[in-house]
Image (cartoon, rainbow, N blue to C red; front, top):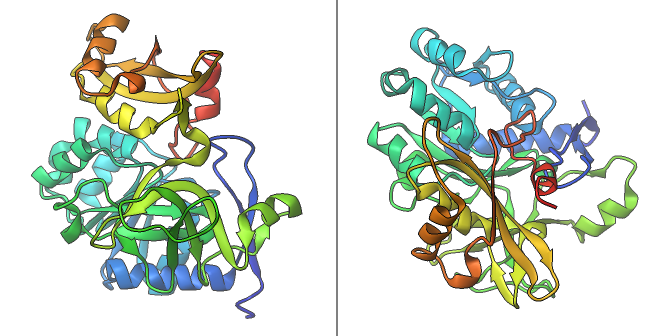
Length: 347
């Protein structure tokens, strides 16, 4: 087997546009699995519950890792909280990979199964895990591992192990072994800790390129480094914090607004279940902050009440000027919010 040969083409989730086919080699997956094992550890008795799509890197990576580790996969036909809850109670599951929405649903409906499970790691990725969600898990002594991963880097890039999450909910830990991460300004220069810039990844896990898209490949792969388009920063301890996709950044009246910050505030309202924040074009301010909100079942909430709540917790320019309520946020098969579709609800 030539490790540098192509293992497969895995498409990105396409949350902000058309999916692109990332060409990943056997070597990419081998080093990713090895790096993950160093961070999370392995055990011959491990049983990794897989409820992610196999055509996304998060699902495929679990299969390949377990093949290399010689451990079991508990394979499920997609995510269903009742089926997952039953598996946790009966299948001796020790690891599970979920996105925040999945974890939220499990906590709502199968709290006891989670609390009494044999889980040694709950790997949470796909989107920033809200601090309040992490705290709920920690209250049940659930071993949460917040992770930042990319299709283009064969899944995991940085992961905060369960013993480090409690002190700083929201961070995704240090880069994995063999993986180098930089945070750079627009000129590509390294930024000091606490300064927000673009996350750049390099190392043996980075893809060969996008399938039949040389122009797109040239845009993101420069001198062996992958420019992710994600914004983040390192703190003083060297832990990575992921803030936002560069394309999702809102600039209103010359001020930067990070949607994740606004979403976290909106979710604090007791009547809000989910929220997605984005910018809409405005002739005066350049962009205005807009939000699509899902209200909890049985709750009542008005636009004005939510705006007033936001003003109590945010600077004025960050407060959503447009708020629409819907029954559910559109998502990809892997559970990520389809921001392109959400925008069309208002634009």
